[in-house]
Length: 453
Image 1: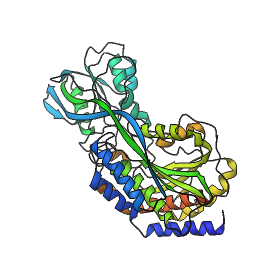
Image 2: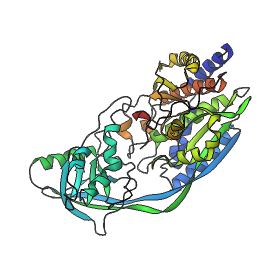
Image 3: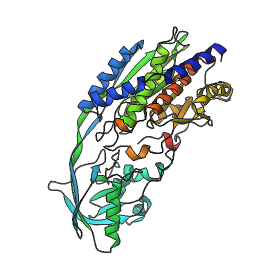
């Protein structure tokens, strides 16, 4: 990397710290659009918003590529303990869940401490009871507590149905103590009954455990109106800054544009969109474009299983070798504390140079096993070079997939630090004299902190 390139990246880093462009973008998205459940009117407004913003920020080429999927809708949802201690429970249906029968469902609770305990129960043994999985999530800066518990949300309904349950309740996958349940994607197996599934807020899960601990059977009534409502089309929105020398080589950065419907999607993943758009916009203001094309992708429908990511991969897989490195911002708005990569050994010298520029931001050099981010999973599996700018997610799962995912949870100074890091990394990746490697050893499993769902 030339001294000029390093000096330019340093200048971008410092310029980013003087501006609040990402905050302005995030404020606009969460105020003017709000929640962006895939296939909803908010989702369509977000696509239009993104196209207009890319144009206003001076991107050379803007595209919206269609993505089709089944549309899930949430309706009214209520739960209540009817015996022995009548009182309401705070719940949220899991994304993809079916509704309860007309008039609701009432049954006794069958308690399981973990999904593994539920799996160990005899098939057809629950006799229509409501399975309740109560395992709690642990708090870690890197989100390592998520992977051990999230399978209860994604796979629990299928397991519970096989055991004969009439519905599934889980403790929310979150680290907060607020009385706000966490939603999130679930999936049914191809074969078997489909039962309603919902998450309890953490305080309500505690309350239900205390009731069960008194020894008497606990009966709960559920009323959930939800389900698939036809097909929908959204779009992956793409903004390109065309490379001056190698326009057919892409440094890919981005976020997912969709969000859950309970909050306004500020940290998941409006912040990632604002960070990466603002970083690229800083580069767009330079007198000359960098060597390679910088492509910012706002992926559609990540929340229901990387639908937009898979569509983008299929549409662009003929350009595999042209995607030289990728990174996604999808872990909230906490400060970046480490920078890791997944590149060929000969590119580690360039990585070291990038790390030196990031160091003054308090960012440590990480290892060479980066996951890149959820929407880059198909590219990781194909062998693409990747980077991860690790964010402090200590409080991320306090707000994740809840009504509390709102703009006030974002620290403007931390958001600005992110933009500084992303601008420097992206510029230097686009200017690197050599590529970062392709057809690296494919991996079907990225690190837990970069997984979807």
